[in-house]
Length: 296
Image (spheres, rainbow, N blue to C red):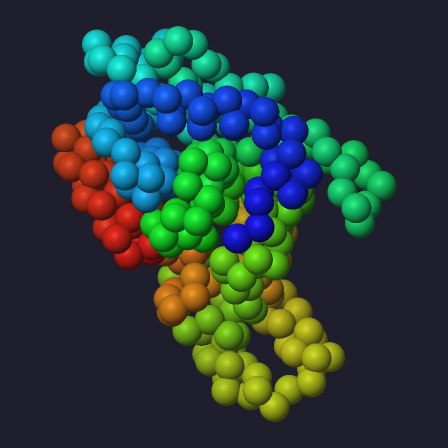
């Protein structure tokens, strides 16, 4: 695995990530608290995987879903030791909140330049990616950390940033994971299983025919065929151009898994319980499954 800090989106948070990792490594009792939402679970499993790989004891606490929490945020239970509170839905800040016994992990606003562009970029790193960065610092060669690393991209996919024309943080993180071999980026025609309702107006009959012809087509023929495939979808103003492009040209696959990450997330969201007690139990079960399997 390449270090996340090699990427310009993470290099500026290297100091705070290393401070958090040091604080976790020096704590006798570690409590991880996260909401019973998909975003919270995806963040949680990154940290838990690193602690399991490092043979560290910890305790998991599933908090109510976002929709059951008032505007003042969570009222934290009285727990001993270091409390790591994951808050995927808070407004992005310039840094993370760290005190003697509480670390609050929320989205971080970043500004950066890239080697391939002179433009100045702005965006936000979500809690899943931040937790993945912390996890790789705690246990850089851990088996479980490697297994859940492909899902580091999941939080930024779920955030509203992909609903705009361009999310530089998402794009750079996707390329980072692809270049290191953690994920495999393929067009929709090379994806075996997809969630069927993610692209309104997509012709399943046309897609099926295109998949059959795909191996014999030239690069120019493929580009032309995909452009024709998405024409009806582009007329729908409820889905952003960037999301369409990602779902057509950049499906993210976990090696050994037939269904792409975006489809897994869509199905997981659709099946998530609305009742809070059921959601908490479901969240814990999904976390256990992800740590073992590495996919939803």
